[in-house]
Length: 288
Image (cartoon, rainbow, N blue to C red; front, side, top):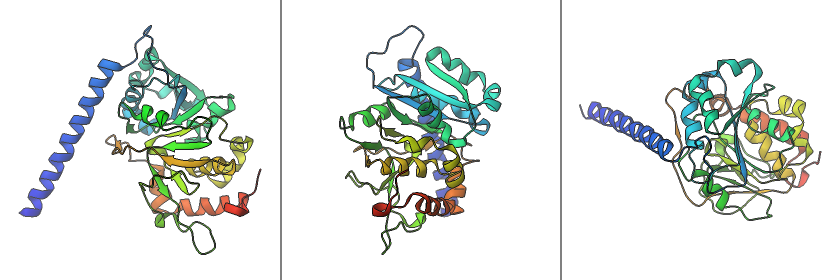
């Protein structure tokens, strides 16, 4: 009986939290969402970039609304969609173009679409990547921007892991890292996870970032790994913002998710080994 009551209370608690989440989103959207012809008072000096694919399209508009009603207005909010999927976008998403959303069709480089096409265009601004299945609180972008140190080659994130090394100075298995660390230092051993949003400063990458054959072969399912390696090879460190927020994903958005294969199937370990073989690690790191 106690177990049944506990389960029921837990379900009711989750349902209540979801109702609050959606109510907060709609309130922010109605009050702060971008409108045609309305200037934004504050510019963040960054481009927010993300991608999506059909299994996520039904909840995508919620994430986009949260990105378009931030306390800091990004110079651009860009959604990259594969050419074959662009016609499948629902009206709830395409209508948001009237609120400033840019929707651009591109080659299907899977999760890499969140950043690679923008870099291929020669974007010289700081880029903030976001995931397509998350509620981003109203000062999410402001916290990332304010944590920057001008001129410092430092990647800023909301959520990160801490890489643990073995006796040879190489990463231990991904599942043995310090997950969701609260470490406050800026370090090359901090590993941003894309789900919380990551700010990459201008010029944090060298030209190797655009080596599509390389990341397709070495890290087909690990864009976070590729981005970390490329920034690290260029001398960057990584830091988490001081504020802590829970990351909430929309119901049903995780039915198809890369993290399940990468974590449970240990594909991250395979991809990290491939990157070490190709580019080295630490003192043995190679330049492209």
